[in-house]
Image 1 (tube, protein in one colour):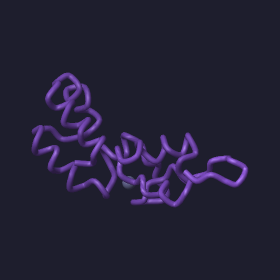
Image 2 (cartoon, rainbow, N blue to C red):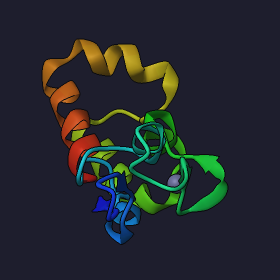
Image 3 (spheres, protein in one colour):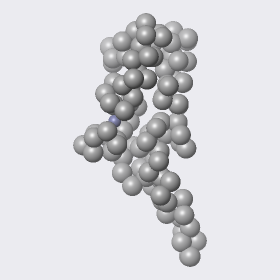
Image 4 (cartoon, rainbow, N blue to C red):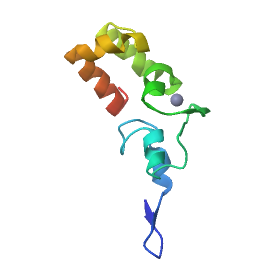
Length: 103
Ligand SMILES: [Zn+2]
């Protein structure tokens, strides 16, 4: 955030570095809502909103990390498997770590 001479805060150039969930506060959709990003869209495709489901299921930027996570938890990360992942505390913790750090 930058401050204007009048003291109002505006997004600075660093706001667009938040393409990786967990770095400086979260997904583009969330950061955009609080005017911390210029756009809610993902860097992988300007037509796609970067939210939790996009990163978990669809985002090409996290393809390698998502594949590694699937091997680690031995479950495909698709919507139909979310209830089972959330019921397993170890798997849920690993998915949460992925969402925070992208790995
Ligand atoms: Zn994406």
